[in-house]
Length: 469
Ligand code: GLU
Image 1 (cartoon, rainbow, N blue to C red):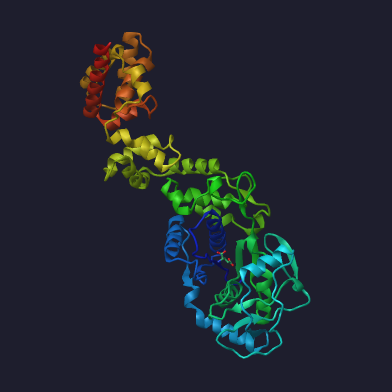
Image 2 (image 1 turned 120 degrees about the horizontal axis):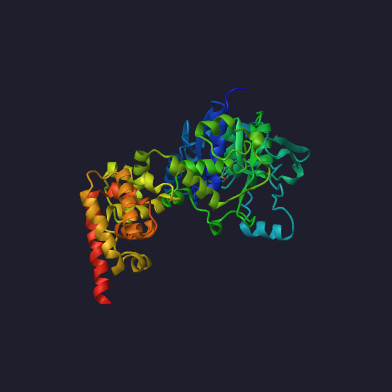
């Protein structure tokens, strides 16, 4: 096979969402699988709806996901001379003509659709041989008979009757190309070999193929991906908890969890769920992409996210959680300290946001204690136990998890108390809660001095309870 060239060509009329990222990923994977080239192209010819901030956001999201491109980002608005060149070719070979009919407005299109007809151009200027003028558009002379078909890499054979197609505008009177024309010119001139995009583009494909044919060019291979649905099988939207890619970042998802999640949506490799990046590249192929839509499942995404949080080396995880700590009042945390903290939290957090929240007590006073926890475990009755733990902790030659284990085991034996009755008051004193990472881990990370300080504070709190009674 000659070099494989794929492209992702978003329109900057909104943020990059899951559907777009899914398309981008499949194109990226095919390019990487075949050691080919992945092109990024910004389709910004919709002047009213395109915005520069969306271009920036899309590029940021692509970087964040790690979907690096090899060429681009090309911008269609920078390529006007190329489109003009192809228009000239089509005019010269009789496949296009000038047309001065007023653009069909939205109302007329809606009226046609209401009558159950496809809104079609009536071909008024097709044989008039009009010269160019200030208000002339260029239309394509669509073949009026025959069938246009292709063998879709995902959907299989698809055919359209040419009668269903009308003479579409290629270049508007303002000189800006329409989507179907610009895409053909770009894919052709950029040597794109595989067009992989959402199945909502299937009706555009015959329109594009006839333009390739008029240019004497071979169309690329087409692969139309099933769309993503919500659990109720309706088109995926905010309602289903689907967010923009940047919103997933802000909610504490790891980019690779999202990549792994999206790769498995509509594609499978046996029963495997967890893939390294290299495995995805090695195994990914269009013939294992399903025809039916993928259903977005946030629980599965959370499961993958917690998996990758657990897998991440501590220093890297510390760096990843740092921006989220600011949200709970911890700025510029010591990275070595944080690298000790995060492994104690990674099994208990599904997102970096949850992890930051859970990390709070390692940095800040755990008060106010959780009301129920304090009521149950910081009562006057717990004061002697807390005092005893403090006294023994002071005397410990070295604070290690092993030594703490022995300390508590001895206390249990000597007092006849249950471990939970000894440990829980200390846990609440240190973390403010009844559930936390392992107590001995917490004490070793906080250190003897801070642990004793927090136990003292808890004793005072518990004694106040006594005097209040
Ligand atoms: N710009 C189009 C879109 O955002 C993509 C067109 C294509 O992939 O051919 O839907």
